Image 1 (spheres, rainbow, N blue to C red):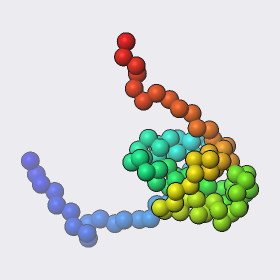
Image 2 (spheres, helix red, strand yellow; image 1 turned 90 degrees about the vertical axis):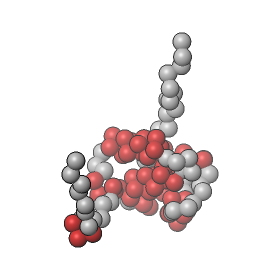
Image 3 (cartoon, one colour; image 1 turned 90 degrees about the horizontal axis):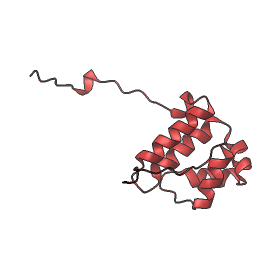
Image 4 (tube, helix red, strand yellow; image 1 turned 45 degrees about the horizontal axis):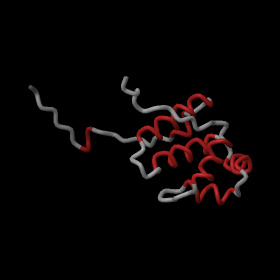
Length: 109
């Protein structure tokens, strides 16, 4: 087996912003679903995805649709924030999305 060794000079990292590539409501819903599925349990991956999706559209318009002030929306989605479940639901619904529970494992027969 051949060992491949990469150095910092061999790798170029470029900034990537999900808000720049998410175009449709279906893409946003899929992105949020993946974030929720991979969330470590602290909710941060889900909040990060919501913040990306909110930035796809005007933050002010989404805040208004969620019934929140723009500054409240920013605070609710900043790293380390712990928004209430009600706030998260309001943001999800303002994005035109819904939260639908599905079973993780098929029940045993």
